[in-house]
Amino acid sequence: MNPINHVAIIMDGNGRWGLKQKKSRNAGHKAGLKSVERIIKKSIEYNIKFLTLFAFSTENWKRPKKEIDYLFNLLESFLISRIDEFDKQDIKFKVIGKKNFSKKLNLLLNSAEKKTSKNSKIQINLALNYGSKFELVNAFKKIIKNNINIDEKNIEKFLYTKNIPNPDILIRTGNTKRLSNFLLWQIAYSEIFFEKKLWPDFNETDYSKIINKFKKVKRNYGNI
Ligand code: IPE
Ligand code: IPE
Ligand code: MG
Image 1: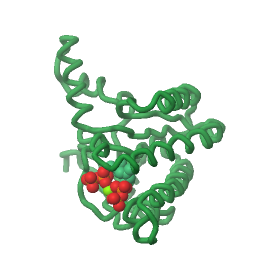
Image 2 (image 1 turned 90 degrees about the vertical axis):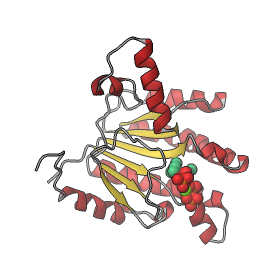
Image 3 (image 1 turned 135 degrees about the vertical axis):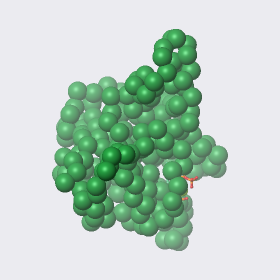
């Protein structure tokens, strides 16, 4: 049985879910938070040590301002209302991505990271303004600036995911089979599961099914 250290999820399909319910795309984003809560809880039950959630990509800035504003307001109020509880549950919170948001949100994110930095039950990496290509370009720039040897170990030292093991499992909900610039380096040997359900419909049973499938996979890493 394969051990699971790290699950990464591309939480896709919120907008379509909202429209399917004859509501707005934003209603889908709101409903998506319930799935986030469910999957965090279940990950703790499974004793998974790292959960990385893709919440906003470097390309998502192309969306209408109204939707972007809604998403960041939602995140703000989610953090304000949940961070103490996460802290009590021994959850460590970390942002991966460039924190160039409003002053208020930047402060909030930094303080959530600081407050939970010693926690160890599970680490939640929230990928926000995250793009894999941006992350890699920056890593190379820093390596060159510091006149360091370009090798795998050194590249990894300059990624947001420094000190985080590579994902064992990558899940993308929302019935789309693409990576959308997510963790391209880190998922070199991850097992990938494309899930038809939209993110707000994704539940504990769906998650367990994926985990059970993963446990039985033969991971070769090039060997036989
Ligand atoms: C994913 O859901 C969440 C974010 C990108 C913020 P979408 O908003 O992409 O939902 P669909 O794919 O349009 O349905
Ligand atoms: C990927 O979903 C990003 C997040 C889930 C945050 P998108 O909906 O942005 O991906 P594309 O644009 O369909 O590839
Ligand atoms: Mg989408």
